[in-house]
Image (tube, rainbow, N blue to C red; front, side):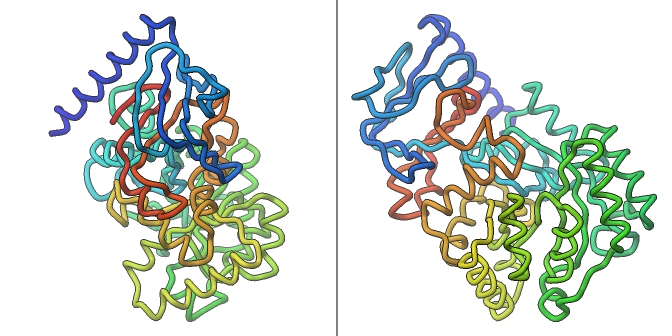
Length: 381
């Protein structure tokens, strides 16, 4: 089945390339609606013009004439390709199948935050080279945690600040785009022990300093109050997972543009209802206090391709529908370090375009009904 799927993707790519050459290099998509995620407004009778994998123009047909080969998508809403800032493509099945399921679900960019043996880096490179169909991947290497604790998968953990620094250098040398550090356990521990923090300040500080010296961002798995406070205090660029974010920490996150990656649906599935409700209530308060949220699912823990279920959990903690969508577009683009290239249907951005039936501003479940996917100007669904 994967061979047939790959052949279909290749056929679509070749067909678009041929049509673009015949039409002077430009193609256009038309649709009944387009969602301007920055303004939070629907554009009626919309068109997106694409050339060389980037958007030339996007807006109403009254202002923009379709050019080149035109694909009429009809009664759908166009959106920028969605972004999941926390996945594990090599967990829970073959990486190539997981990547393809994610792409077909409308997620054209993902951030992979951990795999054994640098398998996620190899998959990233296979997708980039065209050998595998999948989303654009920004990738850490293996999880970096202390020996014997949460992220010591198959004895990959280390101990001591010098060892943390050395692992960061090793990951950078292997081509990691960012570093993933584990500073706490999981939700049950964080709820019972607010001060739980399973690495030392020197280890966390050393990893962050070494990564920043190499111009790499650092994402920290931190769920307890103390671990979250330590992560932000020592310069983390991302917080991985929803958690018990201290009120005083939110202001620092807002000032520095540090996002908390949500992963609410995975926690809901994995924990007792009363524990999840405790987390949900805390996150709702944090959102009211201005907590910056970017979209992340921990896919691999939840099924690949089902990523859009997270939108309903974001709505449940108080995000408006447009802000839930922004979490997976504008905000996630910043969270993966690609704010200038993805996250909006605007001139100059990469031509990642999806279409969904219905209006996601009325019902976020529309984002689970993707009918068209384009990545880098090439339709893949």
